[in-house]
Image (cartoon, rainbow, N blue to C red):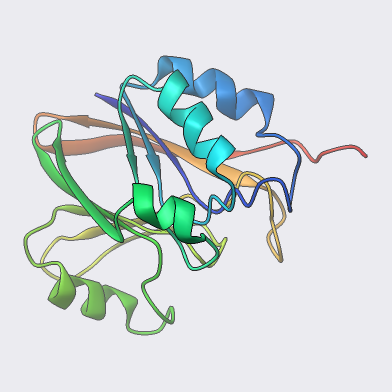
Length: 168
């Protein structure tokens, strides 16, 4: 099962549209995961219309319309693994310990908020993934997203994709 992970799209404030490469990846993915901070409902509408299956949560920058349509935490079994999605996990220091305590029933937790790509494993085995942001790199060298394959209770082919810099 091929998954496309993204977060913090912040449209139309950080960019006017999603990068073409990311949109093309939606067609290849069995499941699209968005870890919050959509900012506009049009992005949610686009992902719902283009995705075979969409799993998303709201973030701290998402208003009432998005909060009415999305949960704060989402859970799903994908490729034999128990996934969770949440926007915020707190400070980087102690993240693995906190998330393992908060989500003891998960194998993989996808999160966002920081715009900083993250891939670690907590004691006990919880895998934490942050795909960064495809539209707002902040202090990172590139805007990013992730693809992963979930198959037979294993997470394989975890790939962080760097997007080309936008030209004005």
